[in-house]
Picture (cartoon, rainbow, N blue to C red):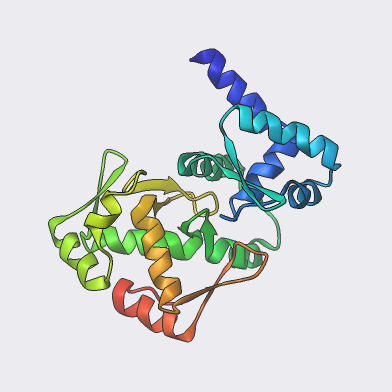
Length: 225
């Protein structure tokens, strides 16, 4: 186990591979060329790094036509990378207040679920309303929460059938608090985007909150945007 941990840590710790992993947190699959541009490296060097990540089963690759697309091999890898970012020490500067309200820290995606200040606020609201319960660093849906999610338009039984974690806390790197992840967290984000509360911003993990979203976040979660 110790040797395996050292191996994984050294793989992720390489600067180029760290950029690859951070880029993939966008939730999309990328070609080797796109990742090479993000990491500012040559296609040949990128191929070497991708081969190592594939061998370690941190990434997987899908072929569509002439192109190959790389992504995380499982959701847990993405959560681990996001959680690692919480180890970054807070930056103290005269621009602290401006930095605190930057779009990426205010409302963003964390792979397939909602993160940032708004993501944490949604989670804290669900906890305060006893819709979800926080027990021993785990989340679970309460009996009242089953009805709440049903009325909200989310089928919990269908989510539980998915081959992934149903609900779990994910440490938010900018807020240093947990937001909700797992299939339930992903479904919440999908619902908010489908209902036009939130809109994705092209080439960014930042999320735009619509006028409708401001009203609905206040109504359902008592969040003032």
